[in-house]
Amino acid sequence: MEQYIIKGGKPLVGEVSISGYKNAALGIIAAAIMTDDTVKIENVPDVRDIVVLLQAIEDIGAKVERINKNTILINASNIHSLNVDYEYVRKIRASYYLVGALLGKYQSAQVALPGGCNIGSRPFDQHIKGFEALGANVKIEHGSICAKTDKLVGGHIYFDCSSVGATINTMLAACLAEGTTILENSAKEPHVVDVANFLNSMGANIKGAGTDIIRIKGVPKLHGSEYSIIPDQIEAGTFMFAAAATKGDILIKNVIPKHLEAFTAKLLEIGAEVEEFDDSIRVRATGRLGNSHVKTLVYPGFLTDMQPQMTTLLAISKGTSIVTESIFENRFKYVDELSRMGANIKVESNTAIIDGVEKLTGAIVSAPDLRAGAALVIAGLMAEGFTIVENVEYIERGYEQFEYKMQQLGAAITKCDSEDTKALKKFKLKVS
Image 1: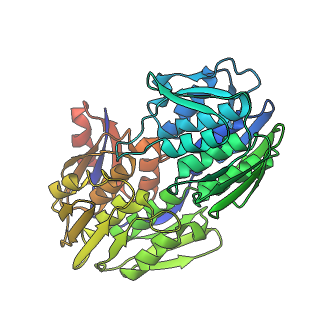
Image 2: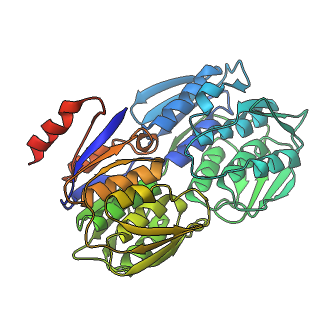
Image 3: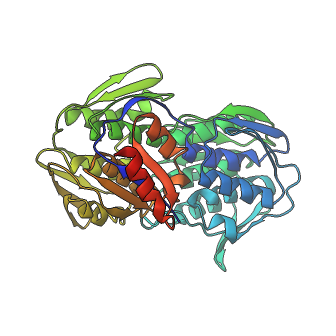
């Protein structure tokens, strides 16, 4: 088991370049198997979730070739199985996109129910609703999603809630269905738009992505393409909040500032300085920041994936703040870990009430999920003394070279095996 060792109290200063968006890459990789031609995908983040999904498509017959760390070629002309093994998909949530991709191309799919972070219930019902509206028969059997049809036909689907997963999954299947499909109350997140743009680059006919109504005219087949994935708005937001939390000054490069507007607004509200450029954003903070009320919402609201980072920042801000989580019911599990470090946070149902403290102090904490893990690293960076963050495999699911990028900004952080008892002593000698 690997862990991060952090010596806190040092401002993060410098420049950092943001990787490709993991959440977009997962949908795009699934979409890439919908053609028999070779697809070239650039700006692919080198993180564990991507590695697992690539292993899963290789296991069913796709050929994957890495041109370099962030560029891959995929050829799915020799898919020999429509059954995706549990060993792979239990590790990541977005493996369910393989249902839409395989159903669209082959009219059949069997994919084990997915895993991922335990942050709350993420039901599959809206996915099923979409597939059934296109004419598929969908069953949950023996822990797998089984979808089959003689022919997919376009339909009119109104999602009961705005679901990114259901929107992308139904869009994948619908782009090869006969006729026109209309998706209402569809998700508007940037990665929905990116997957739609990628499918269009392969010959699909999708209009309206980024709005709540998406129209899809089915095409007979898709062709090869070259495509570059958008920057990761969550990674960018994490570094924005890390700059503010450590009273640092970071220029965050390779971003789309519009995707970051909800984070920018909150940082400005509590007193941080934010300067936007065409494809970069600079965040600075001096002195103690102010309090705020935050409620997570679907995009373009404040994203649930940035809630732990925001709560961590508010833990050392002035006054009382309130953070309401409206997306996932188990997203405050990390609060107990922050309490170990001296935070004063009470959780009542889906709301955290935060009384800001002057400082946090280092402790041994455990990452309960991906984004909370990143938030605990931020807590360690702004805390007094040494912090050990365990279960960093969660963090590496979604952040590329996380500790390296932090080191380049001046952070005193290293990764080591938890069984390596000498590592802490060596690190303390090095940074003291």
